Amino acid sequence: MRGCADEHTPALLFEVCVAKKAEPNVKDARRIAFDVLTRVDEGGYSDLVLDAALEANPGLDPRDRALATELVYGVLRRRGNLDFILKAYSRQPLKKLQPKVLRLLRLGIYQLCYLDRIPDRAVVHSMVELARRCGLERVSGLVNGVLRSYLREPNRVVWPDPRRDTQGWLEHGLSLPHWLAQRWLVQYGAEGAMALAESQLSAPPVTVRVNTLKMTRNAFVAQLKQRDIAAEPTRFAPEGVVLPHAGDLQRLPGREEGWYQVQDEASMLIAHLLSVEPGQRLLDGCAAPGGKTTHLAALTDNRSEILALDLHSQRLEILQQGAKRLGCQQIRTLACDMTQPCEDLSAGGFDRVLIDAPCSGLGVLRRNPESRWRRKQTDIKVLAKTQRQILHQAAELVVPGGLLLYSLCTTTPEESTAVVADFLAHHPMYVQVNLANRVPKHWEGLFDDDGQLVTRTGEHGPMDCFFAAGFYRQPECSF
Ligand SMILES: C[S@@+](CC[C@H](N)C(=O)[O-])C[C@H]1O[C@@H](n2cnc3c(N)ncnc32)[C@H](O)[C@@H]1O
Image 1 (cartoon, helix red, strand yellow):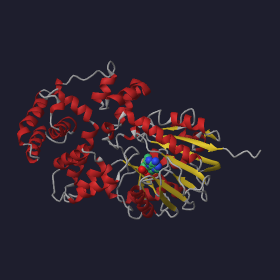
Image 2 (cartoon, helix red, strand yellow):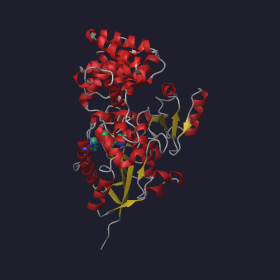
Image 3 (cartoon, protein in one colour):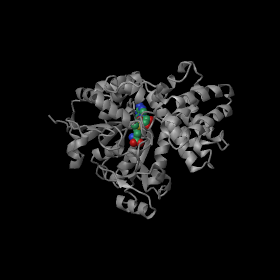
Image 4 (cartoon, protein in one colour):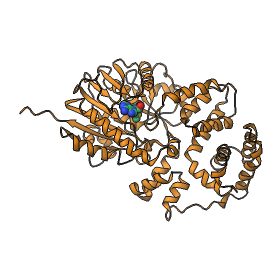
């Protein structure tokens, strides 16, 4: 499941399909990682490109698949940190190196610094070989030299002191881009920023939502037990299950039967905040790929009509496939731009409207590791404007007495609290709802003083960083 920051554009989906066909050879893990990183540097999305590459190499040993995955995500997440190390060993400034040479060096230094299963000499040897196989024979000496010089003198790097130079540590130690390190430092203070940055460096746990249209969480966990698959219930979401061993996802029973949907726990909380009931008319305004739409169908036991809108029709196709697999029966999809009035929607017709808006995705950097380098500070203002426009359109679609829920997977005040304030200022028929009052008591710690959901990875367990605010449309006065 991808967070909201990166949408799969049609061009990219096409590119990935072409990539699948163009890779008939079985390759080793490092070569696959190198090729995937190349495509990501060209604009691809790591999860899509990696999936396509692994699919094109079905004969790959499971350990090699795991290594390729670790290399791709690890190098992308720690790029700032790896470059800081490499700077201490490369005679040439990194900016002057050819991108593919730098890619090789990042792959090599990542293995030496972060993977202890592979002997150092094997790493150096395999990277020199890889340079040759990638047609980079002439730089194999450079790769060999830099990696060996690290092995000879691993303590040459002078790290910023986290207490005296927290900004430097966030950038070079914890691999944040300069602007984001600055931002989180101001927003959360030194300790908070470091904790959040660290939480975004490791792989997220694999969490699935049990599809209650098909079975209960207990029944699903019992099925897993029979297969010796370890599983733990999520702390807050009543239908969530965490798999402590990520590799177990491949072994889960019932995928085609629609027993479960891979979904982060914070994302599962969103549908619950709408307090839906069977028979209500529901609108999901930014719905694809459909994690929350299908959850709403389950919460209403397929007894509510749900209209799922999205700007991208290709993404709605993914939603439809998911809905079919999960046995969701009353979902209708419609491609539409929610920043504009949509003629096909009857104004004021929905009891519940969810706007899970496109956002900067800074709360899910660990899932979309390339976005920490791709996302720009200037995007935030543009996204906030889109969010305000979408909410403005959504305001017209809620019945008096109905609820509008706005959610995001990011951390910026511009996209969260500032958009909420702007919405309330321009829509006097709405009042903000204290969402904490609508959920079980033990969820209390997930809300701020205004009753907005604010989850933080680490602080609230392993879930993603989400924000949600609710607005109640007051009944119209008849005088
Ligand atoms: C955060 S994602 C939604 C995730 C989805 N709710 C889920 O749980 O699977 C945001 C979605 O908004 C869509 N989107 C972006 N701009 C939009 C617009 N102007 N109108 C409608 N949808 C839009 C994107 O295509 C993307 O699918």
